[in-house]
Length: 513
Image (cartoon, rainbow, N blue to C red):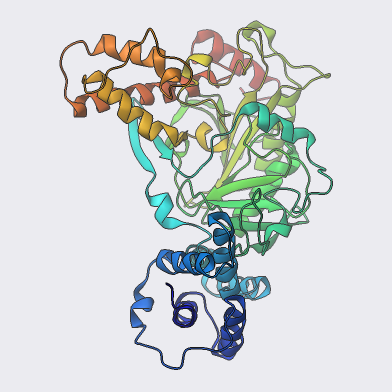
């Protein structure tokens, strides 16, 4: 049994150590937590709790809160216990106004990174970012000629279907739901339900982008270092316009320590949330950021902007320059021109009735003081042969990645579904003959059914006796090459003579040659 009174003292000690609990608030917060735990008085004697000050994550205390909630019937099940524990951690965390005040002070006096360090640490220590769970994700790098991909198997991120994601396009004004979506500002402090995750311990900071109010928070999934989400305070759908480019440039002026990018505004080639405008960024060098120029170009109307086609798998343009205004103007020209462009010779079909073209723009502030804008051209057209998208992962790769290739994957950091961890281990056992697998009788009820073609191919390549390590390497190599192939699928202009000519043909329409 959890000692509730002792738990309260542990939580107070923890909050003073890591969550900036002010001594003037200590009695108030203690009494509040006592009430929430159905207690009427605190512990009369308290043991030495100095070990609490050495904690790096709140896992042990969070688990104790959950156990106490179940034991005392405050919670009926694990879901309710999770909600309750998050609520307690939220009560121990500074209120949003205090967070914003401290964040602004740190940013003005010590710089953006110090301010971000403050908010990030709070988000970890109050369990909004579940660092221990995230550390269990599997990751590696794959060197492919001139580029290096980063590949992770994310054990905490649910796998989504593109059909479900597409429904969000028309769900921007969901009636009767509160909060309307997972990105609305009303999530901050929200207790949660069986269908909505706990947000009591969520804290955000405010900023102005393009004259409108936006918020920044850290992602609970943390796909990379200091992975943040920037969202519009209004529940409006994703957009891709000149304004998008301007907003991203506003952000990096506010946070020169982070890159930021926007998913596109269309299903298949966008992210998993289309009904609320948002961007993603963080303190991480993406694989595409390291890509070298494939061809240097110029536009006489923008002599101060360096322009190149990237030596990257998909169709990407990089603009760099000191003047954000000219960079923004040229970038906006590219975005708007691409939205109207068609080239049926190479399958780029677009129409006024149904737009298929959009972009994925990314902005950074470089060490030499230049702004860098990278624009990935996207198209979500479908055909009978490719009902999931011509420029999306083709069906033969869906066993590895079926979900839309959004901002992060398009830059070369793959977030693969958690199911792959166990599945790849089982496939490796099949290759080294530790496990029997009847290819003729396997049906859809078997988790490995989706990998049937992959297993056949790998068995063909590994006919002799191999050990588990070599078998696992063979499976990982298959995944690596699949990730490369998927990125090539997303290229609207293929890396061949026809594609290169077509790419330049489009750019010439906006004076880039």
